[in-house]
Image 1 (tube, one colour):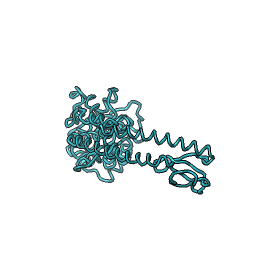
Image 2 (cartoon, one colour):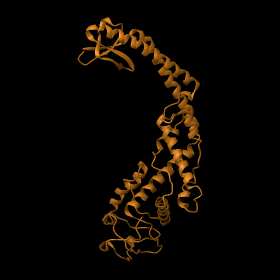
Image 3 (cartoon, rainbow, N blue to C red):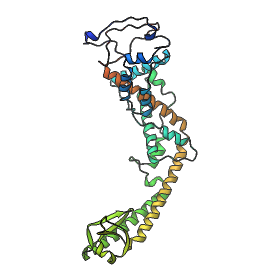
Image 4 (spheres, helix red, strand yellow):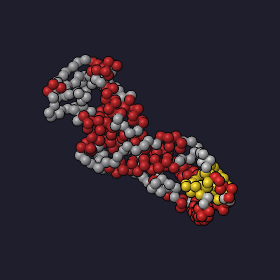
Length: 343
């Protein structure tokens, strides 16, 4: 994006120029010769660096780092008009969703592997991607004549809850697997609550008994391997019924699992294992259901990268006060009230 005009422009920076040099023309092969010296003269690396700072996703960042002028005029015009349309949306304060969500290429790679299972965070990234695309489709609804370039980017996606609904049935708003994701998981977690209460009740009794006898250290209790343990002065450790699970660095405190809790803690470990296995089964089934939408998810990835890239160019254009220049088909260019944006 280059400014066509700027009020209050420094006269020293303003210039009018007509050139016939084949190395610095717009033609059907836009910037046909763009060598290292030309890049250095135009400080193109500085533009790459500025643009890189506005890119959210790695793919867009890579584009910024390897950016070169177009060699095809049609592609150049399309890219410029996409940026112009997005910039116009910003300038007119038209509601438009934030498009800087994470890429989902790793999720796509995993879905391409048979019998693979997505992780909890991966499901949530897919949900955010689907929600973002739905919002973009809604924002551009009915604007195909106003923003034809941006609207065309939506050709392979659609507004749908086919991904969001099944994910929401399994996960809560914080990304945790819901207890009612399956009947078996409901039972397992109810049993875990029951056993945990028994563990705490028995532990408090042991804690009070040791406190009354003067066996407790100042720290009173702790956790080792997810088990609640008593902090006992080592001189009294043989008086406390239970299993020694560790000691303090200097050996003055011994950490003991009360005997009354040993079987209960073992039961809790078995329930945790049952919970992990059931969650894995639930996620495997969910992955299988999501996998059938892989073509749509791939289209999400492409669109998210394009929107992030266009958004980055728009932010740079806003910073520089840039606008779409008049485009010529013949060789040469004419600068009117133009100035170097980096000076």
